[in-house]
Image (cartoon, rainbow, N blue to C red; front, side):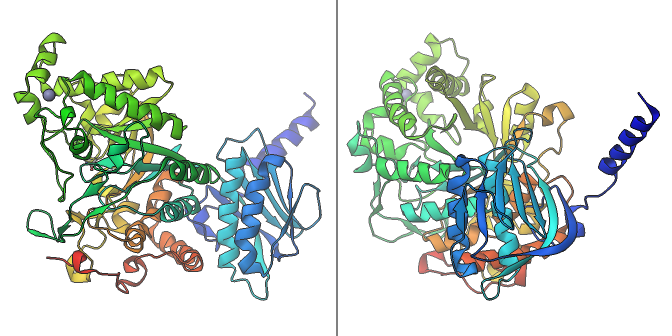
Length: 551
Ligand code: ACM
Ligand code: ZN
């Protein structure tokens, strides 16, 4: 190679290698979750309703239109989306060389250029741009954005949030709003907990009684589980029709969120047993639970009818949910009934199983095999490790990270969702009751700072770390009756989770606080309800209901 050419290459390499991109914390630009890199540029660009959004690919039209609609309030009008290139526009393009969720967002004097590795990457770029616009405090329909280049992609492929609609049910519109909130935080998976002891919430056409008997409980415990003996005397129930579920799945897909349904087995199944007592070991009668905790009554693992029922249910579930993964629970399954059940004991001896833990493993593996045969894979809570799992099962580690670490050591895919960091049904201040928090689950607190400090790969070797697909927060709703309350538990803690799942390993709480002040403005603008402990040290007061007072 000629020396001059070598020199030119070395010069170009120096430009690339030189630290032209600041760490996201070194700039005034506020985005949560923190992008991979932000480089401040020269000058600024003003967006108004007259700015065009030009799409380089027809597949980007929907996101572009949604963005134009979304920003119309700020800009006092709707930006026009066009497939023609124009100057001083927001241009959206795909770049096959980038990873699917990756994007580059460049604000320059002559417009804004967005490139994504896929439609999803472009969607995430628009979430970041939305934060920039709102935080620029548009005046007279004009938002002036400082020039910058943002290069961004997630650390983990799986970023999830679970919502329990069994203990308390929310409307379809509320579930969609939950999904909107996830999208803002670049969360890509909505885990929908649809069946449990206290209610069956998914319509199954073959078993209409499930959403009559199984979806209704006679009444609900008032106050804290274990200490309270009060009930409200009011029947409670409801379910999602298959049309509503399809609507939610489509709505989520338009926001690049996969919905993973959870159908609980073999435990947390009393709503199903109350409907079909023959599916339990004792034959019942059973009642949909009116209180919380763990029931000793579970699906009978010795009965073929149980498997026939579950497979029929799953057949309809698969039609509704196109997700690669189906969550089949597996947590908190006491073995007392199986120990005393002749059918379960016969199964143990016929299958050559060592004990009831292996019977649970038999149960889960049998359903897994059926799902695999239908092109899907399973996720189960970490209890499914007991008695053995197949290589293709994903473990959702909730009792701390131990289960996740053990599963990763076996080479299984893992989602880290430890209660110690990721259970957002727990109190969110250390002071709890003293801070005026309404009744919440658990004895521990998961503060913003705690969740923000979570390191999903701690305790794992580099090789094991490769099996950690990502992270998730769980919102169980025993003590959460209204969607406002659900939002107060979700926000702002979801922002901390989003940063754990998306951004690099470094944590800077002061910088996070600074950026969260901007995100708070987005929450305000969207009308999201959030708790203010993290921002103000106190809370302005939730919709504390008689049922939600601490006692
Ligand atoms: C769980 O919290 N029982 C998974
Ligand atoms: Zn049995």
